[in-house]
Length: 167
Image (cartoon, one colour):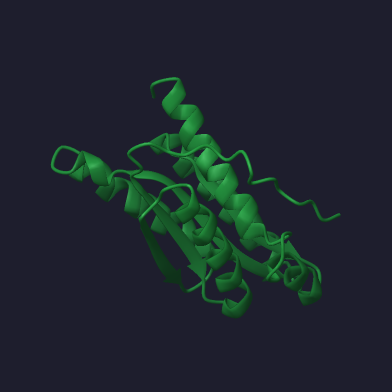
């Protein structure tokens, strides 16, 4: 079921830091469509520094997130204004004839959950495990149902919420 996300009451983030978008190169046209929709919402929310990284696949995304956050933590004393506020991840995994789909999907999610908890930084995941490509196309089309919008809204809401509790 498709759900439209309301962006009309999206909080503005004061003194926004950095958002990193991590993308799998598989099905890049559709992955990029989600990243583009995400970027547009983030920019409307006040973000000017949005870094995008394209990775070999979804399985590499958790390591990339960990590397970015580890580097960010080591640079925090030097440049606190450039801190990563959140990481948004995009990918598409299509079910095939083997267990590859299940292994990649589960390990990507497990890895990203671990990184998010270890570094206490929101990681929003729109790695879409789909049974057929049409399902991914429906979630990455240039319309109000694009999952990039949903990911950006969740990122902004999490950053605003965390700042409200002074984390």
